[in-house]
Image (cartoon, rainbow, N blue to C red; front, side, top):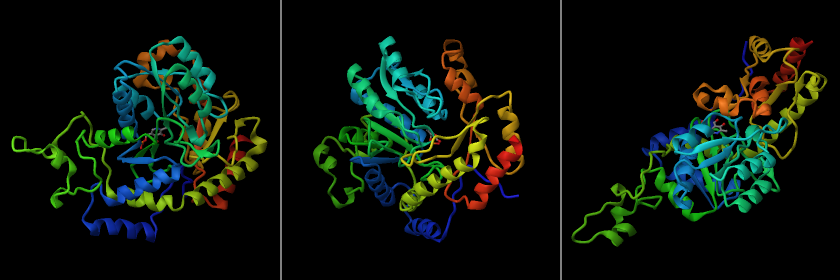
Length: 400
Ligand SMILES: Cc1ncc(COP(=O)(O)O)c(C=O)c1O
C-alpha cells in the first residue's frame, strides 16, 4: 500500500539534467548556481538581498549572530518567540547565547499574537528581539509586531521556514523584518533536500551574513578575481610588510554554513514552479476542508485563505475523550496516511528544555493543548484526487 506522505520530492528529467550539469561542471561547492538562486529567491520574496545557507537552522544561527553584532545585542539578552515550532527555532536562540521567552499562540492560526508579545515585552526589560514563526504558512501579524518593535526599540527576525510565498498585506512573508529565515528542507513547499536562506533589505546585514557563513573571512565578492589581479582587498591591504590573503584573513568568528551547487540547482527548478505548487496546495486544502466539514465536531480543520502558502494540512482534536491523538494517528498510519505531531510546546513538552518546565507550566495553555492534540498530514502538490478522496474516507471510517 503506497503511503500518502506529508511531503514528497519527485526527481524528473529536468531535475536529473540540472544535477548532472552540476556534476559535469566540476563546481560542487558554492558557486554560480547558488548566486543565481540567491538572486531569484530575493526577487521572489521581494527583498533586496538573499543569502543561501546549508540549512534553515544555519540561517537562524547566522541571522541571530548578525543581529547581535550589528545592534550590539549582548549575550544573555532575551528573544520573544513561539513555543509551538520545530525545535530549531529555540535551539538557534540557545546556541547564540540568547534566552528564549515563550508566549502563547492563537488556537486557530497556531502563531504567537501581538497581545501576548507586548505583554511579555512590557514585563521584561531584557528583551532585545522578537522572533515570530509563521507556522504551517500562517502569518504572524507582522504590522502589529513592527509597531511593538518600534515602540520598545526591538529588532525582529522572521522564521519563515514554513511560509514560502504566503501573502500578508500584499507582500510576501519574509519581507517584514530586519531579516527573515527560510528552510528548503524536504517536504517544504520549495525544497532542495537540505538548504536555507536569509532575506534582508539591509546591505550591512547582508554583508555580515555572507561573512558569518564563511568563517568571517574578509572576502566579499561572489566570484574570486584574485587570479586576475582584480581583488580590491588585496590592493587595499597588501604592502611590502604584510602578505595578506583575504580568503584566509578573518575579522569575525563565524561558521561554515555554505551550501552546495546541487541544492541550488534543485531550488532554482522548484522556484520556477512556485506558483503552481502554491495553487495546488491551496486547492488540496480547500478540497479536504470540504470533504471533512462534517467532522468539525471532533476536529479543528485548518482555516482556509487563498493568501496562505500551506506547508501541510494541520488538524487539532477538539476533545481527546472522543479520540486520543495517539489512537487517531495510529489508525491513520495503519491505513497508509503519514502523520506528524504539531511539534509540542517546547518548554513543557520537549525533554531538552526540561530546565524551563517549572517556569512555564500552565502558562501556555493553547500551545500545550495544540502540542498534545495537534498533528498534520500532507497537502502537497503531488497528491492526486484519489489520494484526497482516500484521506477523506479514511478519516470518516476512523471517526464514524
Ligand atoms: C519553523 C522552522 N524553523 C526552522 C527549521 C529548520 O530548518 P532546517 O531543517 O532546514 O535546518 C524548520 C525546519 O523544518 C522549521 O520548520
